[in-house]
Image (cartoon, rainbow, N blue to C red; front, top):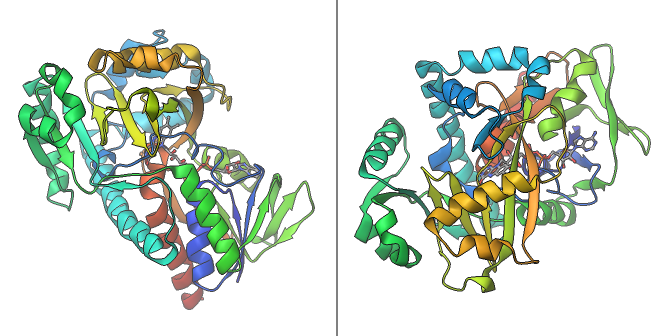
Amino acid sequence: MRIAVLGAGVVGVASAYFLARAGHIVTLVDRNPGAGEATSTGNGAIIHVSSVQPWSAPGMPRKILGWIGKDDAPFLLRLSAVPKMWRWGLDYLRHCAPERHAEGARHNLALALESIDAIAEIRAETALAYDQAMHAVLKTYATTDALDASEAAHQPLTQLGLRMRRLDRAAAVAMEPALGPVAEKIAGALHFEQDEIGDCKKFSAALAAHAAQHMGLSLRLGVAVQGITTAGGQVTGLATDQGPIAADAVVLAAGPWSATLARPLGVRLPIWPVKGVSLTFPRELWPDAPRMALLDDGRKFALTPLGDRLRIVGSAEIVSDFDTTPDPVRINAIVQRSGELFPQLPALAKDPRAEPWAGLRPVTPSGRPLIGPTKIRGLWLNTGHGHTGWTQAAGSGRRLARMLASNAEAA
Ligand SMILES: Cc1cc2nc3c(=O)[nH]c(=O)nc-3n(C[C@H](O)[C@H](O)[C@H](O)COP(=O)(O)OP(=O)(O)OC[C@H]3O[C@@H](n4cnc5c(N)ncnc54)[C@H](O)[C@@H]3O)c2cc1C
């Protein structure tokens, strides 16, 4: 089958890889000059099986309301977004019910576990290098109460395959010596041995290049898609600024832009852009920096070592447009919060080599991605991965390729 994959972010690239491996004739299309150059570029770089819980959660609406108007809040709802997003917002509120949240977490965990298996398969087949590190994530807590509460919140997922270990302060410092000088600021940590670190952009670019070189993938970069074309209710391909691309099936993997591309076909996708920022700087500025990724629960930031770089992230902002300009106020907020644990960080963040970045998470009200067929024959979705797109990409790509195969067998 000729398949066009629309979007060369990490999800589109993983889809293209598994589809090409299954023997399809695959074209991967993106308007950017390289793969992984939108939301998949400067993200937190953590494959966090331990953080798959949807953001639609009990108690979240009240927190979000309390943060309105506070430009440095960890989760900010811009009022300018409200008039356009009422339908999405109402659906989000519905999914904050405890049982729906728990169902979303179970669903996302299953996909994340599938994903670490699928990415191990990719590594074995391709030997890609993307600054990866295994067993490398600690969540830290300022108080014993916060540690207890978080351990209890993760507990149901341990019945379903999440591996978690509680560490007291001394054990946390033994595992991550960079916590030694600030040990009195943490009560303990949770270690998640399945979590991994890796540069999502490097992975996307390297996997796309590998599939183009070894698996016959046709890479069409720098090509803007104007629309998905159909005839008689069946997909016929893509209209682009460089002419049509014919295909028997299209996989829509355009991240936060997916809803706009699906709408002209009468396919309504509940995906809203939730902006986030990161700051990446050379590790040589802080040679004794952590070797593990640290997610600090109360101070709401993550610090990820990425080869010879360090990255801090920790911001979510429900926005009204697709602007990806990094907002200095939001960047400064995560620098200040991370500085509460590591006082050297605010000074390092001022280094001229520090690179600010912003991206738009494609978030669904349920916090679950959309993977599978649509009412248009030949139009498939692999999108809406929110804050877990890097975590779930490989599994989503493999799952989609399997769904397409069983659909073809049934036809
Ligand atoms: C601050 C931040 C931190 C994050 N941290 C993590 C983390 O630690 N772990 C994790 O699992 N996830 C994390 N995420 C989420 C993750 O980055 C995303 O879920 C993931 O990158 C989405 O990938 P994607 O392929 O769906 O979308 P994208 O990477 O955005 O790819 C979509 C592609 O579609 C292309 N496209 C769109 N429209 C068109 C068009 N008309 N024509 C041609 N091409 C088009 C775009 O150019 C783009 O390349 C984070 C996100 C942010 C913002």
